[in-house]
Length: 126
Length: 172
Image (cartoon, rainbow over all chains, first blue to last red; front, side, top):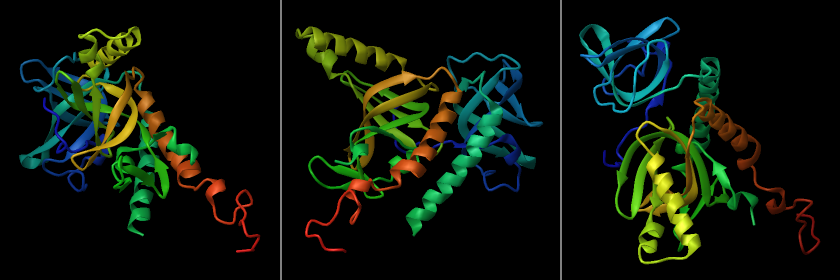
């Protein structure tokens, strides 16, 4: 893939946040999601990951060099495709196995990071 | 000299990409008034383009995508016969260029430069992080260092500081 500065960063989210009322739940939103692999269809290349009892479908057809193992933890960056009846699929650009990641630490770090980013934006606005 | 000018500062992409650029030759960069010249970032490789003389790639840390360039010139030079050091450097650079793959979590250190008006990192070294928690710890490092170090001017440059009293003896 050619390098492009137009690629948007995948904003890290936890799956529970991806509900229709959330500002992150937008057509084409670039997101980074993390969860345990629940199911994977070889023919469709659709994976389902879960975290905190919430699942999300991932379209992995563009990914190479990644093997899927049920029960392992994966992280994907891609764009959200919202289909009728708010059925969301993340069209993954990149993905990786993150077995060993401390999901508790991930959630807490994400919280701190968001606070920091907000402070940074506010300090620049003043 | 401000001590953070000579180290690789750990910055989130949003922070790095919004540094103030001073149009000198070469350009200078400041963050909240403090000069920085080198940076360290951790993120996923979301794009890469390999040419004969360089590898260009993007590192996404969730707050922004940092353009990085790894020059492979040493390798070109050695094909015409170079010193042992140059050969070693070429070999190391080539190895580094081979580990940068889409989806890998990498830690990149290098000089902050500008290309076509955009900030980028000219890579000094790049390693693949095998521990997925390394990225989380990097986030926490960035936050801690910003709050406890980078956000403050060093005492020696503060006007009226006890370490930097007025030369004329006045009490400003």
